[in-house]
Image (tube, rainbow over all chains, first blue to last red; front, side, top):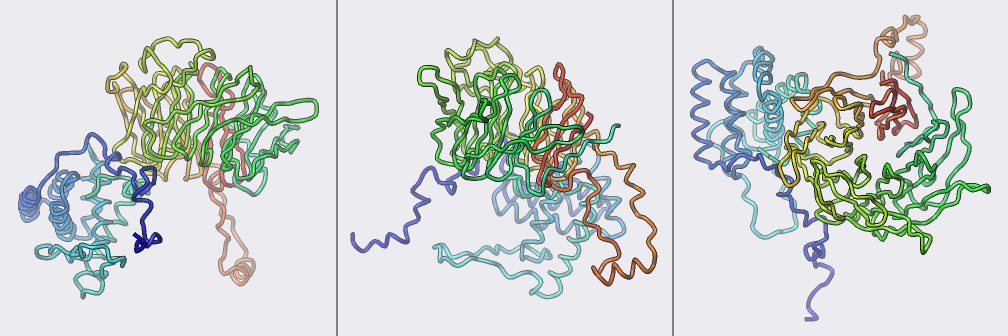
Length: 194
Length: 362
């Protein structure tokens, strides 16, 4: 017993009153959609890519934001993120404002704007270049080593990542013009992550 | 629209402010003290200081009829201040909390007040004649985090609370011997202490910063750190609400809100100006800012070239643009009805981080 190093005990884990034991699931609203699997996301991706090829970028963006797997697992979210970024990259600079205005208006337009903002921030934080199949990247060692698992920024991975970043930034600029700073604030508070 | 009356009291944040019922006395929470200002002419002059708290005062409220002042602070205490011929006399309240007190409001009956705290409880305080002190009863469940804001229902029994667990809740704070039995309403019929009459979470789940009951008490509005305002219309006890409407704005988050009649809400926050929302059960929308910006458009004067280069030399810029276009120069913390009759506020007051108290025409 004398071998226990009391200094390394995580007392927060033992204290039910501790803020680290806050039940995060209590922040999920009752309206959360049913969990979607990776195959659902892949089906949506096929449909969206078809629309994009068929010359309907606005419809593609609308569909991809409406089918966001808010209640899905990490894998489904990963697949869907790649689809969204493909759509965003498939739309020309000159058309961005027109398409955004179409997507962010009408019924549920505000939700789509907030959803797109979430994808922009997620896209900017993730290291995977969207081209090609997304590879599972979070290969974190199972035991907590105590080192933070900061991933290499995608800028280091050659030109592809930097170009993706610049696309996301120009979308971000135009979306803020339409949806305002409130949309950015809601990315931070909303627990229905994409 | 009349220009707002600006009172720039000092260069320090105002955590909370409260006017007396005759609007001649103004109490503001400044650091560890509460300062009392008296109106003289068009100005407010410092007349008294309420000293006693050892840490930042977080909230202050003047009871309109009795004139008693209640204050609470991060030192985990609350005091009730009463005016005596020799000055203001504090009475300590037994809050029994082990974290900061964050918010305090008198009930409309002035028999009770509620203190929110970081200890995940609301202390509902009332006066006990036998022992001559203010004691408290705790509302605990199911609060999961700090209480940031409180609002009383007109019947002085129901209490709305907003919390950093992103939920707005309506509780009963019925205390036997103090309260009369309230009339049954959509919130509930039998209301023993700590009954949960409603628990609301909006989709975007921000920390709740402001709550308010509508003048009739039949609707609840709350705002939070997700830049939205949510209005709830309850249907019947134990039933889901009849309507729950969320207005997601494109603004920075709002901190505080009041109702102006049953179809209008005024809210202010990090955008430093008050905004008006209009609507009813069928839908709400942002109607615009109450700031009169037209008069300030001519601000860019012609500068002489000499002056311009001198400014660029001295400050590295041609014009110092450190002043905001809004009346408040920093975040607004508190908004309160000023002149109010039958639930309609003809004017309201705001205070914030810039040390200003502003009285607006609604």
